[in-house]
Every structure is written in C-alpha cells, then in structure tokens.
Amino acid sequence: MDQLNDNFKRFEFKTVIIAIGLSVFYFLWFHLNAGKYLNTGIRTDHFSFYFILVIGYFAHPVTRRFIKGLSVFAIFSFLYDSHKIIPNYIFNPVHISEPYYLEKALFGFNSIDGFVTPNEFFSKHNHPILDVASGFFYLCWTPVPILLATYLTFTDRIMALRFSFAFMLVNILGWVIYYTYPAAAPWYVEIYGFSENFTIPGNVAGLIRFDNFFDINLFEKMYTKASNVFAALPSLHSAYPVVAFVYGIKSKLGWVNILLGIVMAGIWFAAVYSNHHYIIDVLLGIVVAFLGIWLFESFLMKTRLKNWIEVWASKI
Image 1: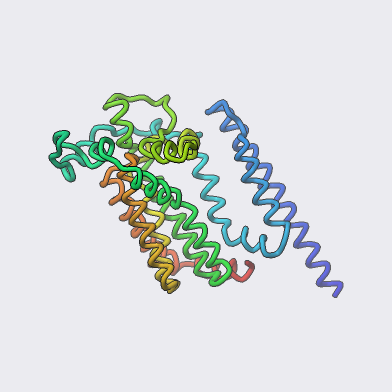
Image 2 (image 1 turned 135 degrees about the horizontal axis):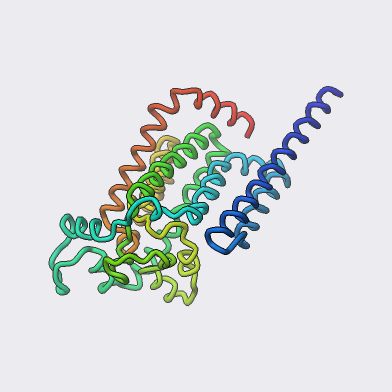
C-alpha cells in the first residue's frame, strides 16, 4: 500500500510539473508572438480555453478522461489560432484571380445576371430559409467532430484516438496547401476584385444574413478573429464532416451516420451559398479528407504509432 501511495504521489507530482511547463509555454507563446505580430497579446478567449482545460483535467476523473480523449483537438485549436502569428501570404503570393477563373470555367453558367459562378448567383438570389439552414450547418464544422470524439472517448477509446489523429493529419495536409498556395475566397473577389490587400480581417460574407435574421453578431464576431484570411483552398470546413462521417461508419453508429451525412452535405452547400468557398475549394477539401484518412489508416497505423495509441487509450 505504501508503494502504491508513493507511485501515486510521483504521478501527481509529474502531472503538476508537466501542467506548469505547458502553461508557461502556452502563455509565453501568445504573449510574445501575438504581441509582436498582432499587437494584441493574450486575448480573453486564450484564458477561457486554458482554464477550461485545466479545470476539466483536475476537477473530476470523468472530466479528466474527457480532456485526455480530446487532447488532440486542444492541440489543433492551439495550432489553428497560431496561424494569425505567421500568415501564409508572407511565404507565397496570394492567388486571387486563378481560383475565380477556374471556378467560372468549370462551374459557371448563364443566368439573368449574365455568365456567373454559383457564388455570384447566390449573392444575388438567396432566401431566408436557406440563410438560416446554411448558418446552422456551418456552425457544425467543429462541434460535430468534437461531439463524435467525445462519444467515442466513452465508448471506443482506440477509435476515438484514430479519429482524432486522422482529423489532425487532414488539418496538417490542408495547412501545407494553405502555405504553399494561399488563395482568396469568393467574398474577397466580390469586395476587392483582383487587387491585393493584406491588411483586412476575415469577412462574414453571406453568413451576415444569418446574423441579421436573428439580430445577432455571432458569425461577424467569429470571422473578425479568422486565423488565416487567405486560406480558402482547400475548404477544411468541407473536410471535417467527411472525416466524422467516415469514422462514424467505421464505428457502426447506425442512424447517427445518417445525421452525419446530412450535416456533411449541408456544410458543403453552405460553404458555396455563403460565398466563403468555391466549389473547387469544397472538392479539394473532400479529397484532402480522404487522403488524410487513407494515409493515416494505411501507413501510420502500421507504425509504432498504433502501439502508442493503444497505450494512450488504456490511460484514458
């Protein structure tokens, strides 16, 4: 019993030391880098995110299990927010006209407004029902994967980690493309044309109609904090529900997979309808999702990572 207590004390001490180290790194990163590049330093949401993780980890065994199971998503959030610090347009030229003309060549059509892209058509021809539906679907882009990961954490820990790591790999592939080929969204072309303007914040685009319908500023606040304005290609909004849908099928979730499929199709439509993505962005997002899943399941799961995931799962 004494040996067990000693082991427990060593474990708790080690956990506290790691928590302190990660805390110092977290706040220094955003204070030094965000302060240097954005003149903002640490924001309120940085504190909120931090305290949710810390309180969740130490509050109760159930919440600790939740935090451990979703730790990959916490890392994703940290990395995603860090895109503000090192914008992709400082590495490669931003492509503004090329995606627009490719979209028009592949999916343009004649309408009463002339030869237009689907985005241009929806900007002038929309409906409150579609505005509301698109807004709700677009709000699902990360909550649905997180809800799925949460459910799997308490029902199939190994599958939860497989899903989380595949999700992260899809993000990494998307981010590599973002920094290799920065691309402007259709709303940018509508507002600024083909000229370069690197001082602008993100834009709510067609989702402003959702905000106006409910007299709120939900999406407006969200997009003014966008981490990477010139990251339209591929659409990771369109990739995330694919990853959730595939792992829902792997987990044999039955009718839940029908809901995941509906959400997936809804997000694809909303991405174009809201003027945030071209169809080519959506298609490449789908390709990146399947590529990431294939690489993870066919290659990474045949390395030592598989054993590491099994050990991690045993500790959740």
